[in-house]
Image (cartoon, rainbow, N blue to C red; front, side, top):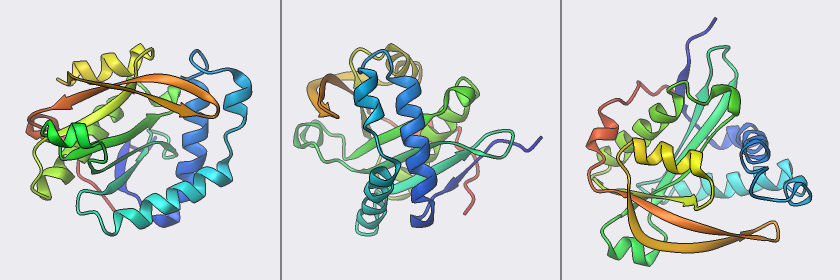
Length: 190
């Protein structure tokens, strides 16, 4: 059995990440969104969206995407970070947004989520950033508990996100010192 690992992703990984994105949403958000909305997710559209994200990372010193491989050696999750896009969070002192972190259910509770958070923190610190925020669907308690266990604190900045015709309440969490997250960062390959 191969060891779990994380590597820096590239534009060539857009289709892999798109498949993981669709699968993770369908697994994770079945309790938040109607099945017909989740069925509208398109791997092709997500792949194009991820190609756009990779292009935008080229001009963003805080931007990076990471791909996780599970113990059997197959891709099982991804994470992305970049410059803060929310002006209220930027004003509150969070220059970096940990914008995405998804793991397939089979790889959750394995330490890979924590390792991907560490990878994003280590990358951000290398780019001279020491604080970051993350958005979470208010009613998705597994993600809230995950970030809270890693030391995230509510910022008091909440919002809504409309996707696939469904509007969901969002809350933001912040890390005032990401060095604690980075301390456990694995070696990144690729």
